[in-house]
Amino acid sequence: MRKYVICRSNMGVHAGELDDQESTIDTKVLYNARRLWRWYSAFTLSELAKNGPVKLNECKFSEAVARTELTSPTNGFEIIDMTVKAREIIASVKPCVP
Image: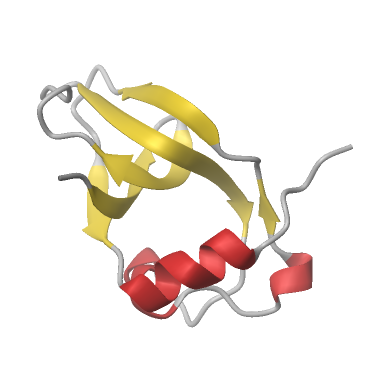
């Protein structure tokens, strides 16, 4: 079972389902992932993972992709488990498309 997380790396901030079996120390594999370009929340990514964003019309999130690999040659990942509430709010944000 994959857990829904926010993952920050040198490749940006993403929300998606982390696959621990495919991930390694320097690569994290996310399914159904969205890149989070701009969001509004209390203060930190931890609070975003707990409560979700606010000002949904001003958030800029990508469309979800089926699978993405995030790499970090310096193993610089931050991975935060998300609450169901935050996941549902992020899913409700319309993708920012041209």
